[in-house]
Length: 104
Image (cartoon, rainbow, N blue to C red; front, top):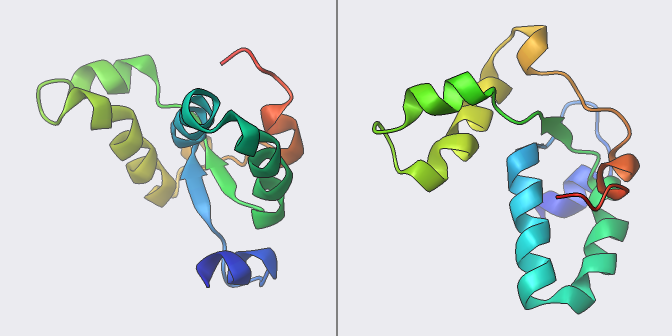
């Protein structure tokens, strides 16, 4: 139901995710369900998600030892999403271009 609401593009409801999360989703789809990758790439832009950039390497290094290593980029992105600082909440632009680069 939440995805249905996001597709409506209501001005008071904006979904967000971290770039790292999207990289991990794509990696897992390629590995486990590669036939679903085109469907994912088609429908992701329709959600109009605000994509939080990858955390700065320094922020990741500073958090090692405090939380599980694999969770560090996800949690930093979540924290950055909540910050009011524009440098941490920039929209990366056109989500359709997010997956044009297969370098990850």
